Image (cartoon, rainbow over all chains, first blue to last red; front, top):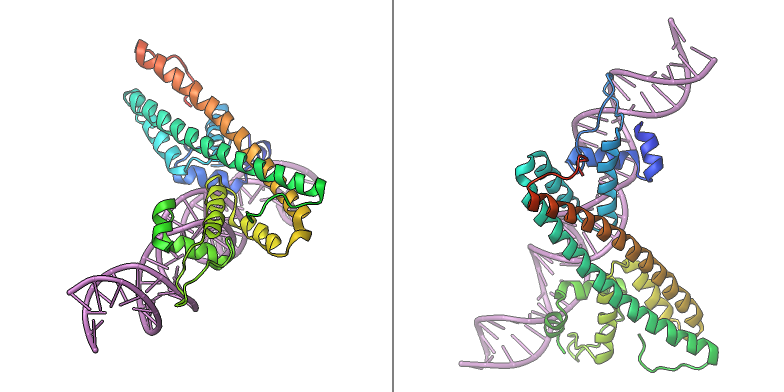
Length: 127
Length: 127
DNA sequence: ATAAAACTTATAGTTCACTCTAAGTCAAGC
DNA sequence: GCTTGACTTAGAGTGAACTATAAGTTTTAT
């Protein structure tokens, strides 16, 4: 699979894919004899992992760390396990914040609905 | 309340608070006769709103837009209502992505647990 | 065979959201 | 009354994650 096909399939720009490879967020991508990227299923799996984690807001540095451990072999399995658990905790924290913000937004939206329906301002505080 | 007190209470640096005021993410803060910031409850309410929204990842630009509408008066109530609903949708999308990533992390963590417990690699795919 | 399109690397530029620095002003304690 | 420390503004600097550019190579279609 060419970089362009992968780019379209996963909606990441070719520049971003090359960037991920360059900084070590994904392993070196399989190449043709001429040196052109030719993504294997495994390459695509790594890219999919990277975009998933990035989409949730985890920093690239974490991906780099995880890949580095992975490339060091089976002895790093416990370290990888710890890394993943830490990042899960980070995401759970982030979800908590997200839910609090959603509650606050929903409260405000409900007040605006009341204000619009009744034509009356139902609050004094400006926020 | 001084900027330092607010800074400590909400865990935002004074620089960030001044930055929010400067760019219009919060309204101009109440001042003493000498021109020093002296936060009212209302000022703190706006700051709390800003940090909440930022903590969930909404861009500063949205806060600026919302405040601008607010300052234009009651005629912008429907526009503010629409803005808030749009941002709620953004956050719901973000939560969906977050949950997908958590599922993926949990799956990987479970596999690592199995690998560690049994001392056996239970997968061939490297991710 | 050759022109156009897509690829390559290396490096520079952009955006966002702060974060820091410099130079100066103000207020509270001794 | 003066020094210390917190405040002020204006503007420059930082880090993360892309994003774009330049200059050159390779593949594909004719």
